[in-house]
Image 1 (cartoon, rainbow, N blue to C red):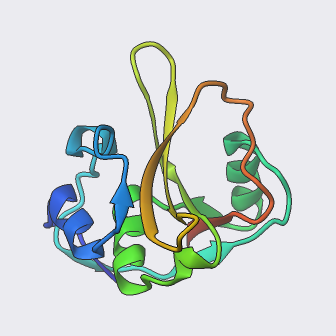
Image 2: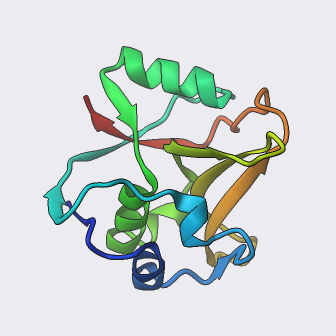
Length: 143
């Protein structure tokens, strides 16, 4: 698929047409967009470990398989191209974890609400030891 790095985060979010998002936290400064420019073809993979994992454990397992965790721009492009995938399971992008000044960690993922609405979420992880549930998929790119 193609990721257009020239679009702003706001444009990427709008193109995804999400039903819900935690707007107070979904802001361009929260995403820390990469310095990449232009349209880039990327092969994205959904990796399922069927285990409860911390961020570090998931990143380590991805690394052993020859993958890097996806960045937010890649997650947003994926959500735009495959809008119903997140209705099957949460899709996590661990490549753009952000830590705020008081030490809280934020991770972006796609999920669904109880009424099957598409949700773009910036998840606050108070403790880095918190684990993702076993049904989550981790979006990744080959090294």
